[in-house]
Amino acid sequence: MNDLLDFGRRALASQPFSKLVGAEITRLEPGFAELRLPLSDQLKQQHGFAHGGVVSYLADNALTFAGGSKLAVPCVTLEMKINYIRPGMGEALVARAEVLNSGRSQAVVRCDVFAVDAGGEKLCAAAQGTIAVLPQKEG
Amino acid sequence: MNDLLDFGRRALASQPFSKLVGAEITRLEPGFAELRLPLSDQLKQQHGFAHGGVVSYLADNALTFAGGSKLAVPCVTLEMKINYIRPGMGEALVARAEVLNSGRSQAVVRCDVFAVDAGGEKLCAAAQGTIAVLPQKEG
Amino acid sequence: MNDLLDFGRRALASQPFSKLVGAEITRLEPGFAELRLPLSDQLKQQHGFAHGGVVSYLADNALTFAGGSKLAVPCVTLEMKINYIRPGMGEALVARAEVLNSGRSQAVVRCDVFAVDAGGEKLCAAAQGTIAVLPQKEG
Amino acid sequence: MNDLLDFGRRALASQPFSKLVGAEITRLEPGFAELRLPLSDQLKQQHGFAHGGVVSYLADNALTFAGGSKLAVPCVTLEMKINYIRPGMGEALVARAEVLNSGRSQAVVRCDVFAVDAGGEKLCAAAQGTIAVLPQKEG
Image 1 (tube, rainbow over the protein chains, first blue to last red):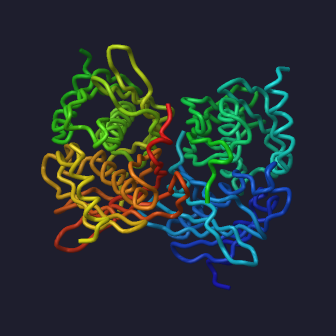
Image 2 (image 1 turned 90 degrees about the vertical axis):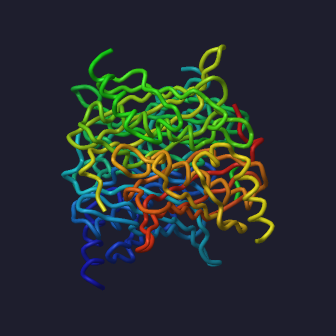
Image 3 (image 1 turned 180 degrees about the vertical axis):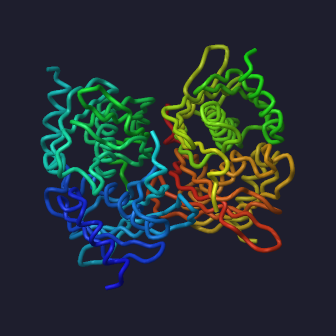
């Protein structure tokens, strides 16, 4: 386990909401993050699929970890866009986020979310957003 | 309690994830929805604020309920964009979503998410998205 | 004519592309901008409506002027999202942008674009984006 | 020249706005489109870069052509999100759009816009959006 992934695991473990839903971080490299979320029943909506908010949570978090791997920590998501492509079904969701560009204080990041089952992976959602170092968050 | 709100409460109660996080629907009228989410500790990230994924869940769900109030049910969110403006702190988050335009099968909806405490409400996030009747969801 | 609007007119006149398409700025107040674009034939696509790129240009520019009215100049659009709602037809497009929140270096802004003809205005597109002071633009 | 590219060239030539700005379509394959826009002075803003509206026009159009290559024609952009990454400078902008998923009536598409000069290509903007067959456009 590399140091960055070790750092990511501790960061994820410090997020009560990520513990509540059961997210895991499986890869963290400079400019890249992979998160995995086993699909328990409590993460679903009324049609039996992962709730859209669960998919967007995973995308949001993967974007932030990928951005944070290039910037500095702590980081926040400034904004995000997500297209839902297929229902989130199967054993787990896997989100892979990759930094397109990073500067001193912000990074533009893309993320694909896949629904995983025994048959393989299917693209479930596509996201894109801006990550910023925390002091940039104004208001 | 009007019939539409009553319907909305049953729909929300049928979403395991919405029960897990504790979301409530407080208004549902044709073209408008208001959801409320008491901010328990388990909904936070490591800095003590509501996790971005919680804010985007609430926005996503409010968009869907508002869109669904004009279209037909069941509905899904096709896509969504969210700008995070202030940390989600205080007693609760309140999301208000309003339909900008609706057709036979899709609606464009905007949503504001507010952080609520004793001092009042502060804008926490702004979202915009497309809601579609479920058979439209392709793949 | 107020000083801010006067400033905006000079800024718009200094943009070759805005002159090419014929955009006018009709209101500029702290946190608000209104741009107008007479719909000449050269701004259309093959179906006779305003090209989507024309609508997004007008939204983008209105977002930037509104954001710039609260921040400082020069400003740029960091990111933007637009939902196209109705074809852009009629005499002109009018874009109205309003700042939702502004900090030291960034502003979150919403914009409505209307198609205008003798019968009035119809909502043509809805946009939302982030404006930043120019030195923030990294890369 | 393949038939699809030939079709694309005629479609682009039928858009008055695309002729005004001088856009060219250089590749069109099922699920992929590449557009090129020589950067004349009239496409710039006051800082000497391509106007953001020009970049978003090119992204929007590339998204539509890529989506249209998988769906049917005529198509429209339902919605789009764009992150501006670097100023659009140099000889030309090149937009490459790729379909992530397509169904009967809609496609989700991503697009990268590059600034091109003698030294090569640099990522200038990243976009993502939904393309729909024209009758889907409601209102």
